Image 1 (cartoon, rainbow, N blue to C red):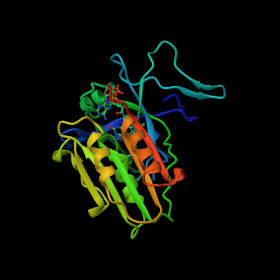
Image 2: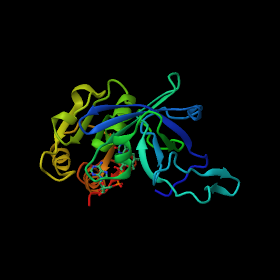
Image 3: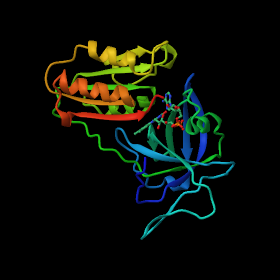
Image 4: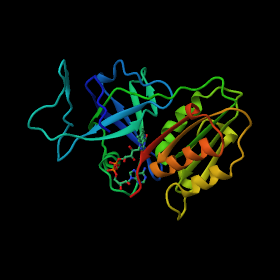
Length: 250
Ligand SMILES: Cc1cc2nc3c(=O)[nH]c(=O)nc-3n(C[C@H](O)[C@H](O)[C@H](O)COP(=O)(O)OP(=O)(O)OC[C@H]3O[C@@H](n4cnc5c(N)ncnc54)[C@H](O)[C@@H]3O)c2cc1C
C-alpha cells in the first residue's frame, strides 16, 4: 500500500450516495480538482485518503521536487485502495462503490456515514490490465470487492469473443446488473468462508477452448489459490493471468 503517486491527491467532496444493494454503497464524488482526472478504462485503481479523528478534510501531501511533503502537525489520513467504477467528465462525477463489509474497517465506515459535502482525497488512477484482443476467451473472477472493477473489465471486452465470469457474493440480494450477459455465473457464499464457494465453482467450470486471458481479484488467499489453478491445471499462460489480492480474511 506504500505506492504514492507523483501528483498530489485531489481533494473531492461527496455529491450523493446511493445504496445499490443491501451491502454495497455507491459514493459519487465531485469537485474542481476532478479536472484532468484520467479515470477512463478498465480496472483503474485509486488510493483514497480518509479524514481521521474528527478532521473535516484529510491531510494530503503536497508534491515537491523532493517528493511528497505532508503538512506538519496534522494526523495522517487512513489510506485504502478502491476502483474507479465510473468517471464522467461531463457531469463532473466520479463513482466509487464500497462494500459495507462486517470487518469494521475505516473506509467502509466512512462510506456508510458519508454525507453530501464530506471531503476525501483521491490519487491518480493506476493499473496495468490491458485487454488482449487476440485472446480466444476471457475469464473474469471476483468477489463483492471486485465487482466495481469486474463491471469495467466486462464492459471493455471485445464483442464476439466468449467471456465467462464467476462472481461470489453473500446472497442473491448482492447480485448486480453487469455487462456480459449470459456468461455471468453468480456464486452465493451463504454460510461458507469467503472465497471457498468461488474456488469450488471455478474448479468445476468448463471453459471455452483456446488461449484464454484471465482477470481475478478478491480475498487474497483465494486469489492466490485460483491463480495457481489457472496456471497449473488449466494451462493458462502466466502473462495472460492478471491476479490481485484485494483484502485479507483474518
Ligand atoms: C486494486 C484494489 C481495488 C479495490 N477496489 C475496491 C472497490 O472498488 N470496492 C471495495 O469495496 N473494495 C475494493 N478493494 C478492497 C478494499 O481496499 C479493502 O476491502 C479494504 O480493506 C477496505 O478497507 P476498510 O478500511 O473498510 O477495512 P480494513 O481496515 O482494511 O479491514 C478491517 C477488517 O475488515 C476485513 N475486510 C476488509 N475488506 C473486506 C471485504 N471486502 N469483505 C469482508 N471483509 C473485509 C479485513 O479482513 C479486516 O479484518 C480494492 C482493493 C484493491 C487492492
